[in-house]
Image 1: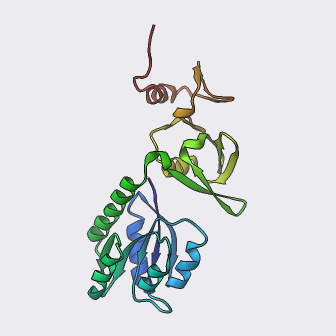
Image 2 (image 1 turned 180 degrees about the vertical axis):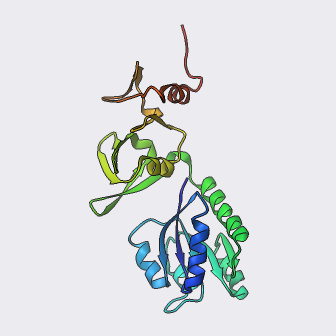
Length: 233
């Protein structure tokens, strides 16, 4: 599971520090850095965000004012130099409240709290990703994906009804999906094991589509696909 996060703080040093912390945590994906709440508000209209590391005292509009103005805000971790906002933050049900200067140890505890929140609140069957195609963000439920195909710097995402081509690596897409249902059969192919209709030699059948096993990956892939489900005569 990747948590898409944004950092918003009007202090350059504070922003830089939190950016460096986010880069050390593998389940956090930094999708934006903003200098003020106005820029953040604009960003939220352009792409999906799960978590905001949000300063409170900023020009134009405070972090508190922005949070109260959003009908369905992302999860929030406040980062501020002022202790007096703590009670208000918890009244707004933010995930955590970090006082500057923030140590990495304290940041990591807040990040882990966010991870546990999302792990508990997002059922596996409702997992989804957003992909950008033709300047548009498209939501794809992971359960609808049949297989992935890598083509140099691009990945084809095949669902039951369509194909999406995105500029990405196969690994980055797999990490975003983060599901044990997806099995890599070849350096260029990953299949949704729930969509497999048959296996014929070195070929995986996915309804009307087929993808190959590579010699080096077949044994490991078969073990993951079967998982004690093989019944012998």
